[in-house]
Length: 80
Image (cartoon, rainbow, N blue to C red; front, side, top):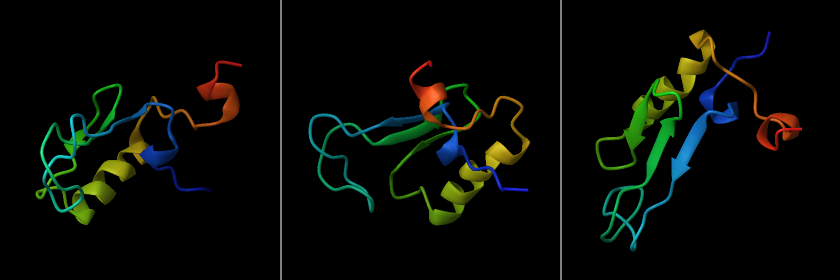
């Protein structure tokens, strides 16, 4: 059985930094922070200095028990 991660789910949401780059260990500068989250509200993270690799791993593992996990694929992303 394959392990599920949120990175492979259609509900993953990524918002790049706006108006430049937010200052963090992941991005540098000023503006709004980079956001990575679940469109269904299961988890949300701003990629700032407090967002560690461990927190990222825990967020991605949410898919293992998520009833709404839907694997990302051409038919799911493009509505075919």
